[in-house]
Image 1 (tube, rainbow, N blue to C red):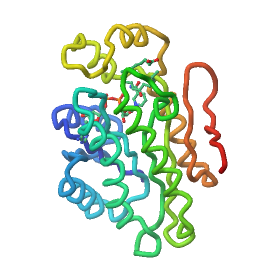
Image 2: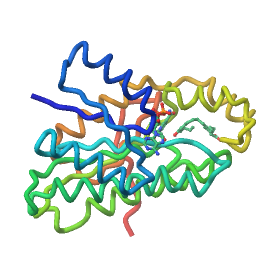
Image 3: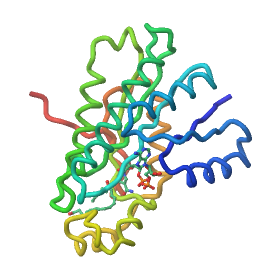
Length: 229
Ligand SMILES: NC(=O)C1=CN([C@@H]2O[C@H](COP(=O)(O)OP(=O)(O)OC[C@H]3O[C@@H](n4cnc5c(N)ncnc54)[C@H](O)[C@@H]3O)[C@@H](O)[C@H]2O)C=CC1
Ligand SMILES: CCCCCC(=O)/C=C/C=C\C/C=C\C/C=C\CCCC(=O)O
């Protein structure tokens, strides 16, 4: 049986999503309020998950936002949040410390490899997620801890994030050039299911470790190839 915990800072949205899923999956889905920028909150959330279900197998490190009006906050959420969650999750997942191994999948972005003058802090945070993922996966201790790490690099996806930036009409400066963003937001977008499909592939394909998966409307998903120095 697969058991899922949804953890999000938005308790109202998290609870309603969990209720929707409960119609199909009954009590197998639980919500916990969590702020990934807060160490104590992350420890509390993952501790509860471990206590409830006995072990952690799969982590989706997905929380993120675009807020160029707060560049340091962007790094703290999008990059430090990923690192914070991974560190705490590792303490439960490591096969050499009583866990069963597993996989952590971080959500980066196309902007982690394709720079944009419109959102430099966001781009930096996502480049950081890619670098963290690839470096973590190179650790020779993998044979001991048995936790794989991969990341997703989608282009624009049709989610509330984009509408959220559009709705603000640029007033809060979530992007630096609102007209350019409005133009980009009208281009074809991925469906969230396209990203979810790659997520499932990464879970199932045990040879994948340290991959950064490019997902765009232009073609099938593929591994990003990086230069070797
Ligand atoms: N929508 C897009 O075009 C793309 C999004 N991404 C990334 O995908 C991930 C998911 O984003 P979307 O679903 O598009 O946006 P979304 O805004 O629908 O979802 C982001 C979620 O993160 C949560 N969150 C924000 N701050 C948090 C915190 N401190 N602690 C815990 N949860 C927090 C929000 O409440 C929200 O539920 C993000 O990391 C985003 O950067 C990557 C590529 C493209
Ligand atoms: C082409 C960008 C794809 C990555 C999108 C992403 O990770 C998150 C998008 C969230 C909201 C969209 C907000 C801004 C996108 C900003 C600029 C897009 C234009 C890129 C450019 O060419 O300048």
